Structure formats: C-alpha cells, structure tokens
Length: 207
Ligand code: SF4
Ligand code: SF4
Ligand code: SF4
Image 1 (cartoon, rainbow, N blue to C red):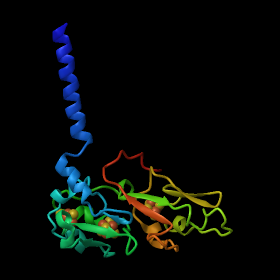
Image 2: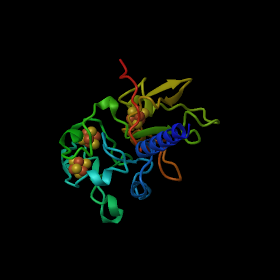
Image 3: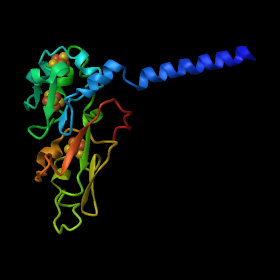
Image 4: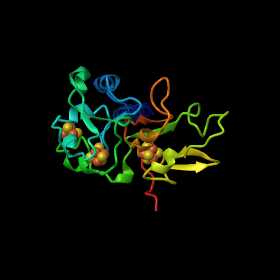
C-alpha cells in the first residue's frame, strides 16, 4: 500500500516537472521575457520562436532585414540589452506584408519556415472608445481595417457596420493598424496588434 502511495507521489512529481518544463519559462527565460522589447505594435517577424528563446536563437546576422522587400524589419540597437541586434517590426511605421521571404533565409531557426496563414505575430485588438465605427456616440462608419486586411472576411469581418477581429485567423501582420486613420492621444491607433509570446495551436486553414 505504502509502495503504491510512493509511486503515485513520484508520478505526480514527474508530471509536475514535465508540465512545468513545457508550460512555464525558467527563471532566466522569465528574465528574458521581462526585458523583451515587444509591446503593442512592436513585433517579431513571422515564424519567430517563443520570445523567451528568441535572443538565444537569433545570431544577429541581419539576413531578415536585408531580404525584406518592404524594409519593415529593423535591428534593435544597443539600448535593448539582451535583445540588441535582434529584429523587430514597428507596424505603425511599416507593417509586414507576409511575403514570407525572411522565414526562408534565417539560418538558425529563430524564424521558422511557416506558411502565410499560419503567421501569428500578434493579435489585432480594436479600441472601442476610439474606433469611428464602435464609438457609442458616433454617426460615422469606417472600414479601412477591413478593406486592407489580406484575410478579409476571415481574420476580420464587418457585422452591423462594425469591424470584428477573429483571433483564430488574425496573423498580426499589422496592415490594419498601419492603415487606421485614427491616432490615439495615448499612442497607437484605434486598432493595435498585441504581440504573441508563445506559439499557439492553429486552426484549420480557411478554405
Ligand atoms: S514576411 Fe516579408 S514583409 Fe514580412 S517581415 Fe518577412 S520579409 Fe518583410
Ligand atoms: S535571419 Fe534569423 S538569425 Fe539572422 S537576424 Fe534575422 S532572425 Fe536573427
Ligand atoms: S486583422 Fe489586421 S493584423 Fe489581423 S490579419 Fe487582418 S490586417 Fe493583419
């Protein structure tokens, strides 16, 4: 009986270690996350590994910067400590047009070769207080974000004259944010992309 209890405890401990290993970053990985340069509208290129692995995987070769035909990828400067020299995309300046060239030139797998629709750089979130179509007292309607989205009617759709983002399909490319006509007083636009820190399960590709 005592033997049975011991093996059950051992099994539970093992499970805790295994799930902890896969689900939670280590202390040094948590530190990397805490100092991550990512924030709203400041994102890693497509196919990036989880953020707490990123500074260790990227060798700062700049190939993703050179290959990008839209010049949207920049390397972070020395002020960014551990992340200095790693690539970032400021979508308010220039969004990612999902040409997928960068993911094929990365020599280390910091950017993994994924398909366009699998890209999850972040998630577009509409600010209902500033979006022209969502403001409660607004008599105007705007659908700029909807019009420019490469996955229109999948990642973003219009319902009752208002745009709605579908988190299952939004790639976080930032084309909507870049095109949004509203600049908020506190910075950002009426639609902003929140960075995604970890790989998430992808839905089936839309037909
Ligand atoms: S997918 Fe194309 S547009 Fe986007 S960052 Fe990579 S090279 Fe630039
Ligand atoms: S190509 Fe890959 S390794 Fe080189 S800078 Fe870009 S992300 Fe880093
Ligand atoms: S909703 Fe915005 S961020 Fe999401 S896929 Fe469409 S244009 Fe890109």
